[in-house]
Amino acid sequence: MKYDPEALTRHVLDCAQQGMSQIETAELLRVSPSTIHRICSAANIKLERKKREYGPNSDYYKQAGAQQQHNADGAEDGDAAELEAATRRAESASRSAKARYELDAAERLKAKLEGVTDKHERFEITYGHCLWEFETLMYKQRKRGPLPTGPRRPTTMAPSMQRAAEASKQHSIDQGNRLFALIPYDQRVTAAEAAELLGDSIPRTSSYLKKMWQANRVYRVRDFVEVPGYTKRQWRWVFSKQPIQPLNNCFEDEKDE
Image 1 (spheres, rainbow, N blue to C red):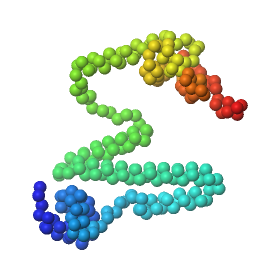
Image 2: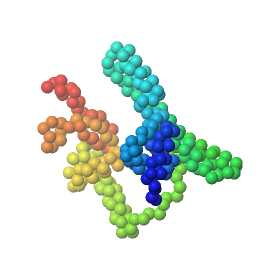
Image 3: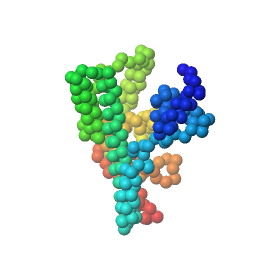
Image 4: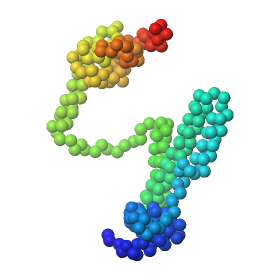
């Protein structure tokens, strides 16, 4: 859509005199913010900056920052002061995120109610919206299980690709079963050692071992072991069919050296 530059400039000047920001002016005149910026640069018009409710310069953040500084200065131990300040920052960020989430939820409800005039229908929409937002918040805070979902959408994958995916999945299951049978009951193996037994790549073998561990078929522990190709021992996952404990402690070895 084309606009009269002179008329648009006059409108922008009127908005500037009313103390409006660039975003508010763009929304009012239904043009892009970049267009408003070009007009302001050409006509030397200064618009007000939009004040962020929860921005870093707000009183909310200044108060939280002052409290963090006070706690840090008052702590005798430097590490304790840093830990306490980090905790305060996390709490401040959590409150800010919650405020933004509630603001977004209100905007979503406003959009749902737009154009609805019936009193009972508005009540039903508001009630359902509140329930859904509450359950979503509880799920994000890990206070409930996954939310119910609708029916799965039909796949758009080609039949040949579906068959290839199923074949790859079945091959992974078969390789995992083979590897499980090859590992002795009392032996500890890393992914590299298991790959030699299976004759497969280390990344794929690592994936097989991880899936077996997730299915509670094997146990694993983080250990400091010797790895071929490395001059020093490395941290690696070690797997076994029976419960295991780490055999090496790198900190004790460093003391001996």
